[in-house]
Length: 213
Ligand SMILES: [Zn+2]
Image: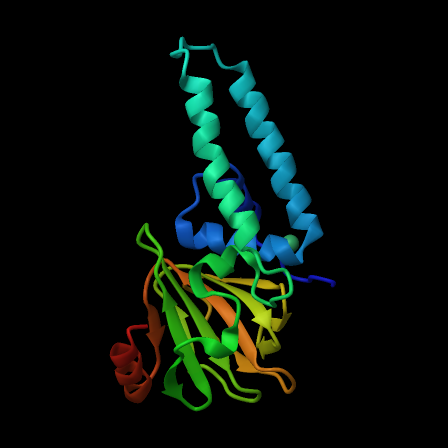
């Protein structure tokens, strides 16, 4: 799979250092399942972080510290590996939040071929899935903050370009855009925002308010 649009260094580094907000971490980890290039970038960043830790002066620890650390690492790691259904088209990191079948989700219909589903994450940022039937578009909107969109299935186009499965689009407050799903498979995206979207026009504003965008 050829990926044209990747998360920026800032996002990858915050993910690799463990400092990323949960919603951002989910987006980067999911992108990495599509993208060997970013998996390598994350590994390099993690190795660099490891060297920084190695260079720090050691502090005394209790005799049980190592065992208790291992015990804490083992459980979730094993659970994630066992829980991942590799036949599913839902990226493994996302499976923990929504399961393995996009078709079985309680989509909330917004109108015009668009549905969405909020994903519960901690840390203040908002994560949601957006599902667009071919040819349907999200209302023109700008952002108060940044928005990152990972395409999970299908593809969409806006004035900045074409985004297919695995691509990440980053948009900033200056950009006003109207993404439209291309013909072909249904387009499902994972969208992460650090502030509510700002829609143009009264009707979109009412719809957005009602649906909690
Ligand atoms: Zn990438």
